[in-house]
Length: 385
Image 1 (cartoon, rainbow, N blue to C red):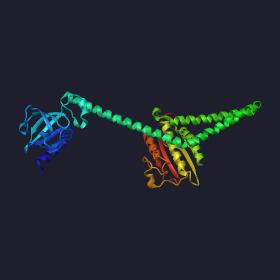
Image 2: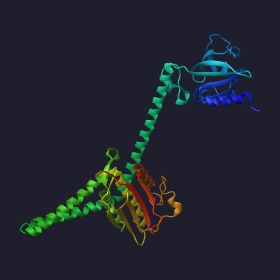
Image 3: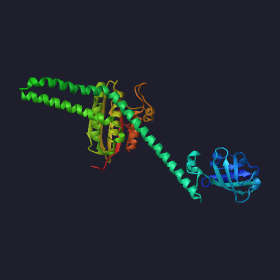
Image 4: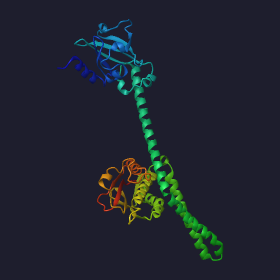
């Protein structure tokens, strides 16, 4: 059989969403039921109401249950935190009394002082209380935006750290790639005077120097673009083949340094709407991972292919490995999961890769039908030309 306190509990629960400062007491002053706002800011169920508050109105000592008359105005201050509440008591059956009230604050600054939330407010007749409600909403929205900004900043830092890790892995190969054309330039420059009277050989040496300079320029340009912060890069329609080729340029010598054959097959002229630097990082992450996976195998090669499939531009990174076990596939994109030896990887590469692709409304999956290890990315083609 339901008791009086049971029914009051049901009633206050129903009222909490529209009248946050509602509670029920018995004749002795014990709180039988209370909304979450009352329990948090005034006193919890089971406590004696008169022990937890200072009565301001009615303005006489010894106010108690005998004064619980219909529409009795009550103004009190919580001993817990000093918050001020006003409202009215209404006698109910079985010797119990309902209080329905609202916060009575001095200024909007009290919203933050008392740590109030939207759940503590509703729409009131008082213009001031409604302004307070708007203030709480404003604060809540501000905090939400602050949290979003913090999340975006943290994501940018993670992406930037992953770029630096990739550059660290590729540094030896890049240094070698720059040193080779520099050696060619130096050798040809020393021969220029020797062939000053031979126009054919002189032209050959000059062309060789120019090609080497162009090669170095492309590498430096790629490094500068890749290493800069993605925050300053706008989304725009970009040829997916251009991004793929630039990723190959930065990973080619890492592959050579590990005796891995790096191949590319482009069968698409499509553009995708993207942050070019971030998508280049995706390709570099996958290529470097593939190189690391096969560098100790008897057969070691990595192939990057790009092709169209209806409304999608598809990129596949295929390597000579024999696939990824199902148990590992389920964890691949989790942060800090790695199959590399301790100290050889952070476990963030694929997690960041998936995060970037999610932002671009693209998907990444492991092709389980391939006899080799294969990651497949599907982008929606850009309609811009």
